[in-house]
Structures are given as structure tokens and as C-alpha cells.
Image (cartoon, rainbow, N blue to C red):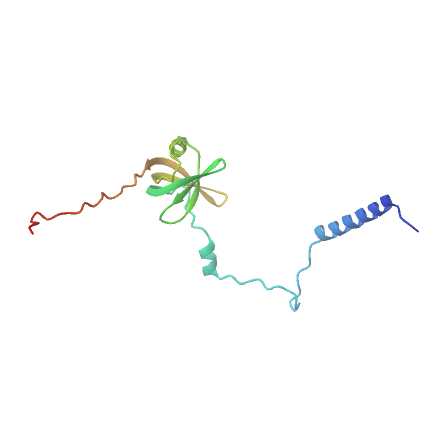
Amino acid sequence: MSFNLRQKFVVLFIISVFIFCNSVVWPQREPMPNDPNAVEKPIVTEQEQKKVMKKRNREGTTIQGKKVFFRQTGNRTTMYTESDNERFVCLENLNLERILKAIDEKPSRTNWKIDGEFTEFRGENYILIRRAVIVLETTPPPTVPTTSANNTP
């Protein structure tokens, strides 16, 4: 008995659908306790969990005079703190619009001192900027070599 090309395709298609449904629809069984092929899940201590968990600020917590810089990612702006290496997504308002305008004019990394208020949504913190001031990087004046007034040979 020979199959033509169409019949072969139909048989292969039915087998493929059966394999796909078998692997997706029915859940995989849990490994038995004494199964030598079972993979052990690592035990995470409470201290390790605390290290991984991000520090969250409660709704309404304010910050003042925090030194930060901003990066734009897609349509959102993220604020990065310099001292704590934390990042927060910024809520759009007029202050943020002014910050982005200043960054567009001078694209190099600019540091800011901000005042703001944290909000919470679905376990994440967001920052509402209340006040922002550019921090001017001051460089020390060049040192001038001093000459002594009593240069006598």
C-alpha cells in the first residue's frame, strides 16, 4: 500500500498536533522523592531573600536634596540615585518635562538634586518630582606654581 504526498502530509500533521497537545495540555508529573533523575531545588535562606528583595518606599514618603541622574527608556524616564544605586520610574508631570527638555539640550549625563514623593503601584515604587535643580560640576582651580620672592643666586 503506497501513500501519495497529500496522505503523508495529513498523517504527519495529525501526529504533530497529537504530540503538541500531549506536551502542552497535560501537565508534567512531579518527580518522585526517590527519583534519581529529579533535580533538587536550591534552598534559599531568609537572609538571601532579603538581599535579593528591593528596598521599597511607602506611599507618600518624601525625599529632599537627593543627588540623581535620569535616563529615558522608550516613553518612560527612570531616575537613578548615585548613593544607593537604586532606580525608580518617574511619573510624568511638568517638572519631569522640564528635566527632559534640559537633557535634550545637553545630552551628556547631568546630575540633579531633586525633591519628590514616592508612590506605590503593584509592588513597585514610582517617583513624582516636586523640584529639580541641576548640580553644576565644579572643578578645582588649576594650581599655579609658586615662586619665592627671594630667588637670589
